Image (cartoon, rainbow, N blue to C red; front, side, top):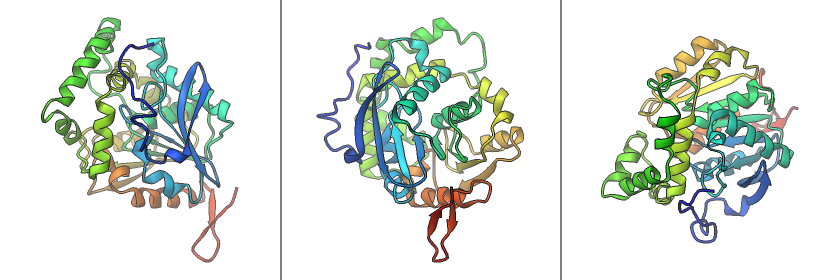
Length: 310
């Protein structure tokens, strides 16, 4: 296992958002931190690279009023353990790990929501038939290859350097330098409140968290998603943000070119972390998507409420 300093649940997690919903489970050789709460059609939430369940701190309770919600920390992120095999941090490796965790939890999502790289994981799981949700919501999803990551020279040598413990400690140190964290957050194009910023600062102070993010990015190959996207069966909603500097809004248009059935909703006053800036608006978009006839999770009860229609 990595020798990098990781977050401590007793210390760093003492005031963790939605802590009462947290539990630790063993699956696929990993110790997972998951949050599970609410009742209704089950919904799976997956955060992006370098984040954790805290990313859904305000969205999760809103969704839990109509859904049973499951939100895990991805391998090596937050309070979940990191696999010993470096290749397990690849897209197929993480999808396999998530499959084991979902089976252990006996959780079969009727709806799936993923932010950034979490959206790519959901597409992989759905294309492979591991999950069969009625619909998928991509929040600023990183689902197509970015320039530079297609090249075969991004090889084992480069991956080894990027995901080394020394580099992880160096990156964590750079973030901790004056202005380092502010530059990191500025790249998202999002304006977080003090609580949200403090939680990201806490995460980025742990070299193990930084190392997991680097290892994940070093092995992330989205070309199979691009190749297989036409096989995606569930309806797909692409939520984008005009101020996102990480996944440009135009990426959603490229996705729809490969999957014409996909719909796009854009927020003009948000960045990459739109679901943290505007959780109520994102929850409303998800609720409206769940009521669409092609998704069919809910129907109106005549009093502007929602009734499970499964």
